[in-house]
Amino acid sequence: MSESLHERVVVVTGASRRTAIGAAIARRAVADGAAVLPHTRVPHDTEQPWGADADGPHALLQELRQAGGRVEHLSADLADPAAPAAVLAAARDAFGHVDALVANHARSSGQDLEHLTATELDLSWAVNTRASLLLTQAFAAQHDDTRPGGRVLLFTSGQYHSAMPAELPYIASKAALHELTRSLAVHLMPRAITVNCIDPGPNDTGYADEEGRAAVAAANPGARWGTPTDAARLVAWLLSDEAD
Figure 1: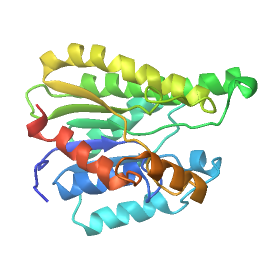
Figure 2: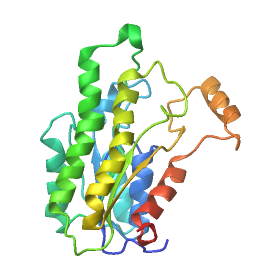
Figure 3: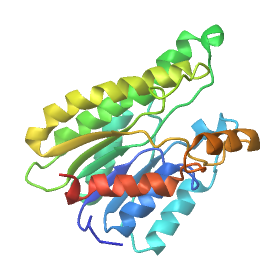
Figure 4: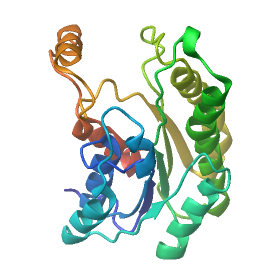
């Protein structure tokens, strides 16, 4: 790769599954020369229909280190309001500073209007929205403004493209991140920190059935799903100096 992130330190949340976007971002950041702290939360995936990659965090760390990466790891429940600051503190303790935050994590729960619960609304907001904001706060508080490459990347979803009536807690919390991005970007730009929000589109990371896979491919002009590597390419550019 380009070594475009040489001497940079990147935190990537939501990297529990080796087939998913967070792991792909961590691989690309290491390939581009960054030191990386992947954050993971295996119990969340255990609750999901696709199941957990139980050995995923350990195996990913081994893979990244074998590729020459400087890598540390933290497992944390981002529903805990103290967890975001702990994630950034762990990265700074390991590497001395943090240059970029990729808040890729997400909580997903299939609740439509009839099955909506206050508990799930609160939990989805806590993990998807509150934690992303607190991660950004903790990142900005420790960021050295004299270093190049200050970056915050948030992740939204496709709720502004089409209706997602079966995912109300998820889309409410993801839409909030979309709308927060402009205000965070304006606030942090004087400190040479860019803020962007990414919608990676449908990514086939192991959760789709054959019918869903065919329907998404048919609706896409390119006749295919996106891949985690596609998302990682975009993240790599947004982390680079070319994205200033």
